[in-house]
Image (cartoon, rainbow, N blue to C red; front, side):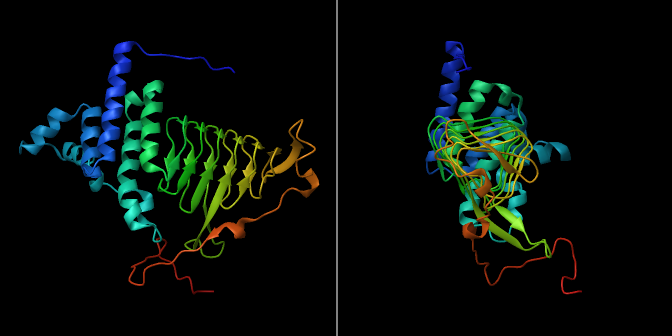
Length: 298
């Protein structure tokens, strides 16, 4: 193993534990999540004095007012908030937690790796549908909702990864997702791009998804498989296979697994439609075409 143990000075360790335990306790309580997130971001940003002055009616500039209001996630919007099929009840809480995750990552303190890994791991317990033990989440990870993600034990997600859970996303034990990876669970119709289909995307135990690659919605990366750098996965990746390219193709079976792996010439099967997730929209939903097009025109 190439890693080594790193520890903080005792005083820093104690302060970090106390803070993370306090946030965990508050998020687990009946306290309003929106208020908890606002309170945490004000203090982490060092803006408590300015916030108190504003609350007591003192004059602030328009820019200061926007900044101070934006600590409250109820005063913000996320791209996924506009999605017509979202679960309103589940999204209400996950939005607040996602705002805390994103804003934490924008602060200088997020570069303190030991602290940031533990803080995000604690948040994952509240944001994700399920998160296993020993997971590590690095800086700049984004989600669609968060609440449609299930992650197993000891998984690691590196910098600037996008985990799209507009459909459903399942990540197994000991999965490694490298910097810049995009994993999708929704797709668009090729004729009408406003028509969205959601899928269940799966990355199985011990798989490695390497730098800048993309997993298309509804595909499965099999156990112990490797997705090569910048590969674009458009079909299922069999267990123990190594895939590379655009589109990704199996080029090798991991040494030692040949007797149990699917032969290379049988790889490349697409099972996307088997993992499609149907959804219904409310009858009274007001929708609009963001491109303002006449889709009936031939």
